[in-house]
Image (cartoon, rainbow, N blue to C red; front, top):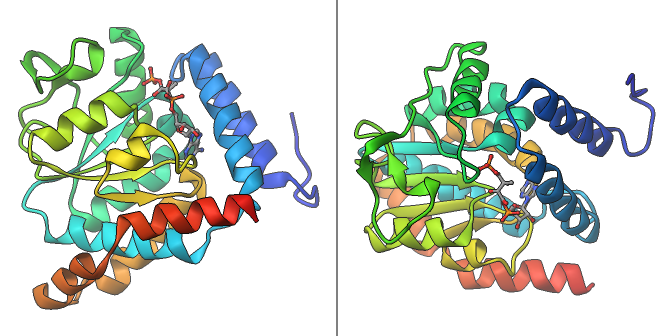
Amino acid sequence: MKIPESHPRYASLMSREKIVRGVEKGITSLHGLIAQGRGEAFDYLLGEKSHNFAMDAMTAGVAALLLAKNPAISVNGNAASLCAEDISRLAKAINAAIEVNIFHASALREKKIKKEFLRYGAKALLPSKKYSIGFLEHNRRFANKKGILVADVVLVPLEDGDRCEALRKMGKKIIAIDLNPMSRTAKAAHITIVDNITRAIPFMIKIASSLKRANVERLRLIVSKYDNRKTLHSALKQIRH
Ligand code: PTJ
């Protein structure tokens, strides 16, 4: 469907189109449509814009990723259909591995997601059945030894709470992107970006280019000053408002 750019809800409608196309291409699961609807509801309450609390979290998140020894970005079917190109650009900017990790198990879908990233020049890793991150029983426990298994900082857009908690128990620093500030993921992450992934990733690319030349002390200061409880509190206040 052709959506005119003048439509007041152009961005939201485009995301719907991308998710639907993702399902048609076998990248996104049918459940992904439900997750998108939940996200849209929160985005609506947030006024469909990136707030200061989200910008602060993005800045701290990018600083943590730049400080990391082995940064990784975990991608599922929704992240792939909504913003594979931007995630590929962000991964390049911060020198991070991209790893496919999906909840609804499907080897075919994993391969299709990998192929989607290849369109933008990014070689996404696939999880291996040989390695498990522990604390989990479902498909999201598997990891790649060159990606999430060895990562010290992991960016997890649209994550489920179980895995976020499991990765944290392993001692990894977790940066989540989740429009719901009350989700278990939002509460379990060290840094929670309460924003739409479609707006957050492009902002993070810009932040990465401005912080690229910052020294280690400055990056550490940004991370240490950041307070995730304050972020979640501000997001809830915004929603109530
Ligand atoms: O590809 P798979 O099999 O891994 O499946 C992916 C989904 C997203 C279906 C799966 O991880 C899932 O069921 O997720 P949940 O538990 O519904 O969680 C999705 C969270 O992401 C919810 O808190 C939503 O509010 C949030 N969310 C949805 N869309 C967006 C979003 N957050 C940021 N940007 C969005 N566009």
